[in-house]
Image 1 (cartoon, rainbow, N blue to C red):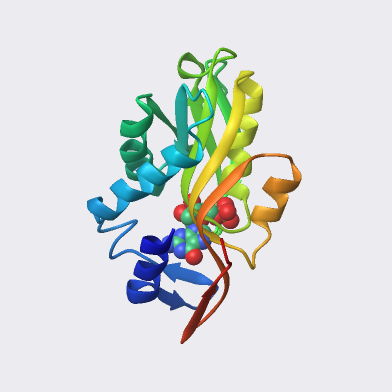
Image 2 (tube, rainbow, N blue to C red; image 1 turned 60 degrees about the vertical axis):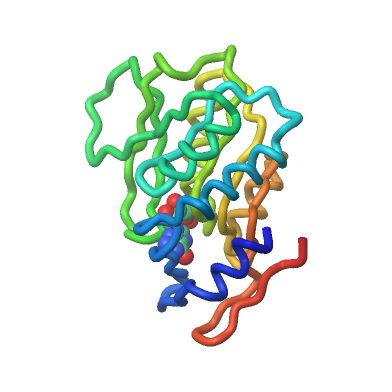
Length: 191
Ligand code: 5GP
Protein backbone atom coordinates (compact mmCIF):
# COMPACT_ATOMS: atom_id res chain seq x y z
CA UNK A 1 0.00 0.00 0.00
CA UNK A 2 1.93 2.97 -1.34
CA UNK A 3 0.34 5.64 0.86
CA UNK A 4 1.40 3.70 3.95
CA UNK A 5 4.92 3.02 2.68
CA UNK A 6 5.40 6.70 1.88
CA UNK A 7 4.29 7.63 5.38
CA UNK A 8 6.62 5.10 6.99
CA UNK A 9 9.52 6.55 4.98
CA UNK A 10 8.54 10.08 5.95
CA UNK A 11 7.73 9.66 9.66
CA UNK A 12 8.94 6.23 10.81
CA UNK A 13 11.95 6.19 13.15
CA UNK A 14 14.21 3.16 13.51
CA UNK A 15 15.15 2.40 17.12
CA UNK A 16 17.70 -0.03 18.55
CA UNK A 17 16.44 -3.60 18.87
CA UNK A 18 14.74 -3.71 15.46
CA UNK A 19 11.92 -1.45 16.60
CA UNK A 20 10.24 0.87 14.16
CA UNK A 21 8.51 3.78 15.83
CA UNK A 22 5.40 4.92 14.03
CA UNK A 23 3.81 6.58 17.00
CA UNK A 24 3.24 9.89 15.22
CA UNK A 25 0.63 8.33 12.91
CA UNK A 26 -0.29 4.76 13.83
CA UNK A 27 -0.11 3.66 17.43
CA UNK A 28 0.07 6.63 19.73
CA UNK A 29 -1.08 9.67 17.78
CA UNK A 30 -3.35 8.20 15.11
CA UNK A 31 -3.84 9.68 11.63
CA UNK A 32 -7.45 8.77 11.06
CA UNK A 33 -7.44 9.61 7.35
CA UNK A 34 -4.56 7.20 6.83
CA UNK A 35 -6.10 4.53 9.06
CA UNK A 36 -9.35 4.92 7.15
CA UNK A 37 -7.48 4.06 3.93
CA UNK A 38 -5.90 1.11 5.77
CA UNK A 39 -9.40 -0.08 6.75
CA UNK A 40 -10.59 0.17 3.14
CA UNK A 41 -7.55 -1.76 1.95
CA UNK A 42 -8.21 -4.60 4.40
CA UNK A 43 -11.81 -4.72 3.17
CA UNK A 44 -10.65 -4.86 -0.46
CA UNK A 45 -8.19 -7.67 0.28
CA UNK A 46 -10.69 -9.78 2.25
CA UNK A 47 -13.83 -8.89 0.31
CA UNK A 48 -14.32 -12.53 -0.71
CA UNK A 49 -14.44 -13.75 2.92
CA UNK A 50 -17.66 -14.03 4.95
CA UNK A 51 -16.19 -12.27 8.01
CA UNK A 52 -18.47 -12.07 11.07
CA UNK A 53 -15.96 -10.80 13.69
CA UNK A 54 -12.69 -8.91 13.71
CA UNK A 55 -10.36 -10.06 16.50
CA UNK A 56 -7.40 -8.02 17.70
CA UNK A 57 -5.27 -7.68 20.82
CA UNK A 58 -5.06 -4.72 23.15
CA UNK A 59 -3.91 -2.04 22.94
CA UNK A 60 -2.56 -0.82 19.59
CA UNK A 61 -4.70 -3.07 17.41
CA UNK A 62 -8.02 -1.82 18.74
CA UNK A 63 -8.29 1.54 16.99
CA UNK A 64 -7.17 0.11 13.65
CA UNK A 65 -9.59 -2.81 13.97
CA UNK A 66 -12.47 -0.47 14.79
CA UNK A 67 -11.92 1.67 11.73
CA UNK A 68 -11.58 -1.42 9.50
CA UNK A 69 -14.77 -2.86 11.01
CA UNK A 70 -16.74 0.08 9.66
CA UNK A 71 -16.11 -1.36 6.18
CA UNK A 72 -16.92 -4.95 7.19
CA UNK A 73 -19.96 -4.00 9.32
CA UNK A 74 -19.05 -6.56 11.97
CA UNK A 75 -18.19 -6.29 15.67
CA UNK A 76 -14.63 -5.97 16.93
CA UNK A 77 -13.50 -8.16 19.81
CA UNK A 78 -10.14 -7.77 21.48
CA UNK A 79 -8.12 -10.18 23.55
CA UNK A 80 -7.20 -8.61 26.89
CA UNK A 81 -3.79 -8.92 28.42
CA UNK A 82 -3.91 -10.19 31.99
CA UNK A 83 -0.89 -10.39 34.29
CA UNK A 84 -2.28 -13.23 36.36
CA UNK A 85 -5.20 -15.38 35.63
CA UNK A 86 -7.93 -16.87 37.75
CA UNK A 87 -8.80 -20.04 35.91
CA UNK A 88 -12.24 -19.38 34.63
CA UNK A 89 -14.14 -21.64 32.25
CA UNK A 90 -15.85 -18.68 30.59
CA UNK A 91 -12.66 -17.45 28.96
CA UNK A 92 -10.53 -18.56 26.04
CA UNK A 93 -6.90 -18.00 26.89
CA UNK A 94 -3.45 -18.22 25.44
CA UNK A 95 0.01 -16.86 26.18
CA UNK A 96 1.78 -14.11 24.28
CA UNK A 97 5.33 -12.87 24.67
CA UNK A 98 5.42 -9.15 24.07
CA UNK A 99 8.02 -8.18 21.47
CA UNK A 100 8.34 -4.64 22.75
CA UNK A 101 8.21 -5.35 26.51
CA UNK A 102 9.80 -8.85 26.59
CA UNK A 103 7.15 -10.05 29.04
CA UNK A 104 4.81 -13.04 28.84
CA UNK A 105 1.14 -12.20 29.15
CA UNK A 106 -1.93 -14.34 29.41
CA UNK A 107 -4.45 -13.10 26.90
CA UNK A 108 -8.10 -13.78 27.46
CA UNK A 109 -11.34 -13.46 25.56
CA UNK A 110 -14.81 -14.14 26.86
CA UNK A 111 -16.40 -17.26 25.33
CA UNK A 112 -19.62 -15.24 24.93
CA UNK A 113 -18.16 -13.35 21.99
CA UNK A 114 -16.67 -16.06 19.74
CA UNK A 115 -17.96 -19.48 18.72
CA UNK A 116 -18.07 -22.09 15.94
CA UNK A 117 -20.55 -20.03 13.88
CA UNK A 118 -18.02 -17.21 13.46
CA UNK A 119 -15.65 -16.37 10.59
CA UNK A 120 -12.76 -14.37 11.96
CA UNK A 121 -10.37 -11.80 10.56
CA UNK A 122 -7.38 -11.00 12.79
CA UNK A 123 -6.00 -7.47 12.67
CA UNK A 124 -2.89 -6.02 14.30
CA UNK A 125 -0.51 -3.11 13.80
CA UNK A 126 2.81 -5.03 13.61
CA UNK A 127 4.01 -8.52 12.87
CA UNK A 128 7.50 -9.30 14.20
CA UNK A 129 8.13 -12.78 15.63
CA UNK A 130 4.48 -13.70 15.40
CA UNK A 131 3.73 -14.30 19.09
CA UNK A 132 0.75 -11.96 19.20
CA UNK A 133 -0.86 -13.49 16.10
CA UNK A 134 -0.11 -17.05 17.25
CA UNK A 135 -1.86 -16.29 20.55
CA UNK A 136 -4.91 -15.01 18.68
CA UNK A 137 -4.87 -18.00 16.32
CA UNK A 138 -4.88 -20.33 19.34
CA UNK A 139 -7.95 -18.55 20.71
CA UNK A 140 -9.75 -18.88 17.35
CA UNK A 141 -8.87 -22.60 17.18
CA UNK A 142 -10.14 -23.13 20.73
CA UNK A 143 -13.42 -21.41 19.87
CA UNK A 144 -14.09 -23.59 16.82
CA UNK A 145 -14.55 -20.48 14.65
CA UNK A 146 -13.24 -20.36 11.07
CA UNK A 147 -10.06 -18.34 10.68
CA UNK A 148 -10.42 -16.44 7.40
CA UNK A 149 -7.08 -14.66 7.62
CA UNK A 150 -4.95 -11.99 9.22
CA UNK A 151 -4.46 -8.35 8.20
CA UNK A 152 -1.30 -6.65 9.40
CA UNK A 153 -0.40 -3.02 8.87
CA UNK A 154 3.41 -3.39 9.04
CA UNK A 155 5.22 -6.71 8.78
CA UNK A 156 8.92 -6.78 9.57
CA UNK A 157 9.84 -9.32 6.91
CA UNK A 158 13.33 -9.85 8.31
CA UNK A 159 11.81 -11.42 11.43
CA UNK A 160 10.22 -14.83 11.19
CA UNK A 161 6.60 -14.24 12.22
CA UNK A 162 5.32 -13.92 8.66
CA UNK A 163 6.93 -17.18 7.58
CA UNK A 164 5.55 -19.03 10.62
CA UNK A 165 2.02 -17.81 9.99
CA UNK A 166 2.08 -18.44 6.22
CA UNK A 167 3.60 -21.91 6.79
CA UNK A 168 0.55 -22.71 8.95
CA UNK A 169 -1.61 -22.08 5.90
CA UNK A 170 -3.11 -18.88 7.29
CA UNK A 171 -3.92 -16.23 4.71
CA UNK A 172 -1.81 -13.27 5.73
CA UNK A 173 -2.13 -9.84 4.13
CA UNK A 174 0.44 -7.26 5.22
CA UNK A 175 0.02 -3.75 3.83
CA UNK A 176 3.74 -2.93 4.06
CA UNK A 177 6.48 -5.53 4.41
CA UNK A 178 9.86 -4.19 5.49
CA UNK A 179 12.76 -6.27 4.22
CA UNK A 180 15.51 -4.37 5.97
CA UNK A 181 15.94 -1.33 8.13
CA UNK A 182 18.85 0.60 9.55
CA UNK A 183 19.11 4.09 11.02
CA UNK A 184 19.25 5.67 7.59
CA UNK A 185 17.67 3.22 5.17
CA UNK A 186 14.51 1.21 4.99
CA UNK A 187 13.51 -1.10 2.15
CA UNK A 188 10.15 -2.64 1.36
CA UNK A 189 9.31 -5.92 -0.31
CA UNK A 190 7.73 -5.47 -3.76
CA UNK A 191 3.94 -6.07 -3.80
P1 5GP B 1 5.21 -10.22 17.57
O1 5GP B 1 4.27 -10.82 18.58
O2 5GP B 1 4.83 -10.53 16.15
O3 5GP B 1 6.66 -10.54 17.85
O4 5GP B 1 5.11 -8.65 17.75
C1 5GP B 1 3.90 -8.02 17.46
C2 5GP B 1 3.52 -7.02 18.51
O5 5GP B 1 4.67 -6.35 19.04
C3 5GP B 1 2.63 -5.98 17.89
O6 5GP B 1 1.34 -6.13 18.46
C4 5GP B 1 3.26 -4.64 18.23
O7 5GP B 1 2.48 -4.01 19.21
C5 5GP B 1 4.62 -4.96 18.80
N1 5GP B 1 5.73 -4.64 17.87
C6 5GP B 1 6.55 -5.53 17.27
N2 5GP B 1 7.49 -4.92 16.55
C7 5GP B 1 7.28 -3.61 16.68
C8 5GP B 1 7.95 -2.45 16.16
O8 5GP B 1 8.94 -2.50 15.42
N3 5GP B 1 7.42 -1.25 16.50
C9 5GP B 1 6.33 -1.15 17.30
N4 5GP B 1 5.89 0.09 17.55
N5 5GP B 1 5.68 -2.21 17.82
C10 5GP B 1 6.15 -3.43 17.52
